[in-house]
Length: 344
Image 1: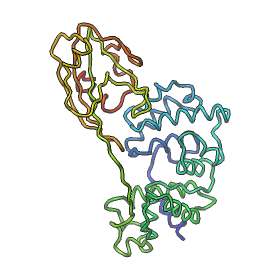
Image 2 (image 1 turned 90 degrees about the vertical axis):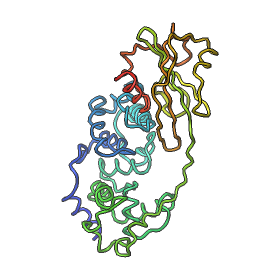
Image 3 (image 1 turned 120 degrees about the vertical axis):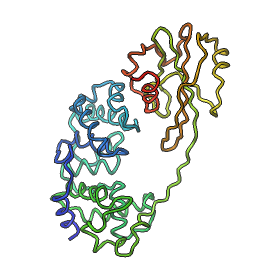
Image 4 (image 1 turned 60 degrees about the vertical axis):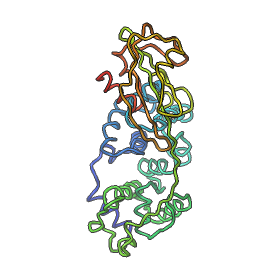
């Protein structure tokens, strides 16, 4: 009864999305990864652009990582792009360039978790594996009256087991997409459309006035403050960019030379003098901003320093004409700085 009602609703109300009806596992994979931590409206343009640039798994595998990161720029969570790239090379090396068609092999791909593997397996290959994401967790917790912490692995396993009982063998892909649609369109985190929900009469949360209390999510995240002081050296319309090569946030992306200290007070004149960098005009701070990541709060400060000559380059640094700054993949903070300082 549940499954039939869900699929009837989906057939009538499903959204018209670029990847809807797609059976190519590569394209399904790209859409699923893009939609992690990304709103659908924003993700659609990136989906089209990514596939225009890398139309096949082989094309993605053959591309340099810098190009992949550049196409991904603006979506954030860059580990997703790196994992896509690594997994594409894994598919070429281990599967001859053909996307694997069984769940264990899909799950074994770099960066592919239970949810993504189940989504690809069910939508592309018709395999009855339930795909449980945040939308599904919320919908099932409310419908079933589950008061356990949905951030706990045991609760996710309970929801997966429940969905496994519901998923049909003949339309597993549609079932998973319908469950996600319910969470995205009807059973939303705030102000859900309970009166328009086909399951309102059987929903525990709605019938017991517990919609606002469910689901229960308890997750403590420790946020660390970091203070980045960026030096925009200028000489003859050239500047310096450096690639973040360490195992840290924004790895492999480019930025201006960085001084990271424990606070916001930075004596730039003293720094320049200590490093014997001669400037032609008094250095000045041109912009500051705050950028929130999951476990980091970045306080970024940008200084323009006109110099007699560009300072010696360290490892991973290069001289770049100001006119070419947009050719490099950068984090959102640096992208916004380019817009403000150079109107690029």
